[in-house]
Length: 137
Length: 190
Image (cartoon, rainbow over all chains, first blue to last red):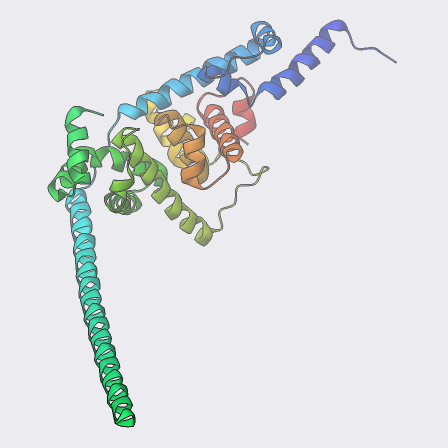
């Protein structure tokens, strides 16, 4: 059986390493995470990974430049946004007004019920007192 | 946040409606641009921006001011866009599985086949439009708007790990499509 030459083995190892690194190269190109020493050593010696890093840097640079580009919204967009908020604000105001009135109604009913209860209690207490006086006399 | 914008935010929080309108005027083109990049068409972008400002208006009291108003607004916009993308995906049954091909190989929309004179920027913008919406969202929020992974995950309603996986896949797809290495162009031309 033929054993692979040193050169072939090196290429296969590099190839496996390239595939394993493929997902991480953009992150390293971004510069947020530093590559571990063994990864750096591989990239330093691998033209394919170096080329991929260069292309990722180019892509990230290009994406970053899009940040300064402001698209022109269609006419009426601003008016539409303001009208939408206005409409929602009005709805909220009406709802809060109705809730306020509902609160006033409920409060009025509660006060009336309390007053009626108190009056009833006074009447009952008066009757009881009169009955007690009649019995005593 | 500029001093003027900060003042407008403070006034709007105190209930000054015209201050909020000023904030909208100062930021809506930027918010629209983000919305357009996320959803890929004008009509949806307008809906997303309207929804985002309405949510911002309702939630302004909860804005603590420890981030820029624009960053806060980007997050809301991303969230609104994600909701809309989710609805669209449910209708179209868009599924991202690990084996699905990310590179659109139709020659009529292959950026490589377009004008050679087009700048990287234009080609990148065009390639972004062709990414699946769920991948486009993460790369736009991370690589254009610099939002942290945590914020992206929160606004898109996915885990941080999922956000990172999508980002890798989106970047890889864009890189292979726009700047293929030797051998990759043949692989994707089939």
